[in-house]
Image (tube, rainbow, N blue to C red; front, side, top):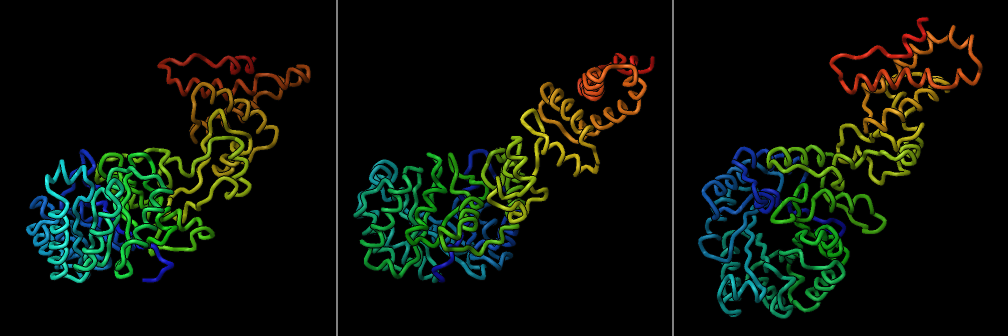
Length: 437
């Protein structure tokens, strides 16, 4: 494996499906797997074959069809799980068995109700069993970040000797802090004598909002496989987000000096697909794929991006396959540059004088309505131009001060306010009666 590549192990179909309320059928899992393959994800964890007949069927179907990624299945360190996993993934062009077992005292004592030596023997035996089936075996000491470090080192050493080619370090409950997690990885590198025989991976949960930060901290100290979920879904608060990890590495080559194999132009469409099939909405302010990721509302920001996109955007929307790209959201915080830019996009050529009047009417409406859409702008421009055509005789008989006061401004805003409120019976617009005299 090249040291300048970070491999992406996506577990959307396994850990992601463990999100409360999510249940995917075979066809839905296949559809997501195809999208992950198009994205060039290195490893797809297709499911947990021993957990249900449906999951076994899904993993088998994905293993048969998807040829461009390694297909992994999850198995507890139990003989039946390992056997079932192999039966499901053996149809893949590149199969992997992922064995896991708790390593923290709290889980060994209260969940497994076994002793440390017995747990160690289970891990060693089942990794060896998996290694007889295929040459690509991953082992995870679950809850590693709350485990006694020396016990983790021993477990990893014995599992590598038994045939594990990847050792995955899970922050199962999202407990770690980035600096602490990075040091834990360094300690593993220094205290597991045969670590050079295996690739180190990390699997971080987001209970404290640090899943992506912990994953990237591990990458900085030499980890070259990161386990992720699309949209950051997963148990409880979710997992490290695929799009965040990948785009952080892509956006900051000056810092990481690394790359991935991911086709980032597939990120947006895959995010939408996963959201649709799982029923889990993406929060608007979600990094990279949220609806607001490339939307600008502040007048200062809009002024900047209309001059040069990079003034307030560190990623190009095209890089993630965003269909619309940069969007200026018009509301009371917007400035003249934002309004003028959107009018230009809509094909309106307005004079500076017209823009002055439109901007006043725009602000008046925005205070009442909130976000201004394209239909509102159409109405504003239409109202302003009607006002300009009918006010010529009016301006001739009034002082210069009067011609710059309210009629034009009221013409656009009052007409639009009436439309926005959708009154059943709309009263005549006062300025219209006035200009007809």
